[in-house]
Image (tube, rainbow, N blue to C red; front, side, top):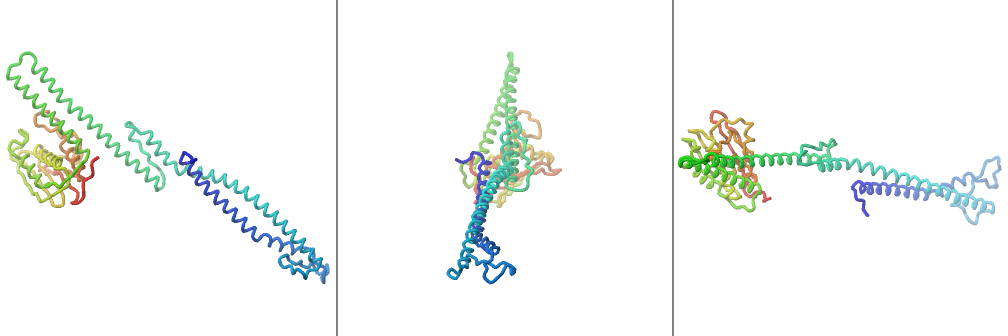
Length: 411
């Protein structure tokens, strides 16, 4: 049965490999020693064996006995044969004793080595898996209240260091998304609650008692205006939610023709009502541009950009609408001078440069955030830049993927 923890598995693997390596080394040493041990012992024994008294005397020094491997057989005398047998028996006994001692010492050394190997494998696997444990504990502690925590693994470059850094990067993105979601929910609740409060106050105060017909007409007009504003806000929220889900299906859309149609509608007579500045001039350069996407969402993208350019312009101002064959849609307008640091904030939901007055035709602060969401759904890159003084205003560019590159799938 396999161990249940990664550390135990690594310990088993490392320990088994080290013990097998030690056992192989012990076996190899025993084989090599056994192979030449008898010859070495026999040579040593025959060198110091008693001399055969043939022609030498004790004063002449000891005579060498005949080695067992070179015994000539029938040419030996009885004394030489007896010496040969004694030498052979002594060599064999010495070999057996030496091999037994070697085997005993080797097994003891192997047992000690096995214990040290298992301990070393356990320690090493703990060192290797320590970053994984840190990542696991951090992930276990995380909740919506402490998404600011990071691993910050202090380790040399490697796979686990990259894993920890990737996890920290994912936490950064999650914290941004959760923060944006919380701000969106709070702003949406505020935006939806305010019209209801206005309607209630108009009904309770304006219609209290027996108001004259003129007052009733004014209250009626106010309630209808607030209802229209609330309806527009709800439609914008639904559109934002749909665009965040991605595209279920795509087809080729003539963006230049779509932009021309939306431009005619947004800059026509009566567009945007009293909020439309007087004397607006329009410059357009619509080169052929076909993109893959959803025609309805792309229409909302162009419409919101143009409505934003018209609503936040100035009398006698200018609007520029351009499409280029390399996949870029550009909408630029004159207007108030916007500090460059505020541009990114304007792309967030419910962000405006001026306080909302809850009047008819007033935007909900979702236009540019819807544009950014639709651009992401089509795999396009959106950039916004503040125009310098004295013209002021904003320039928004949406760069669509090259032809043949499909937008990201839904979900």
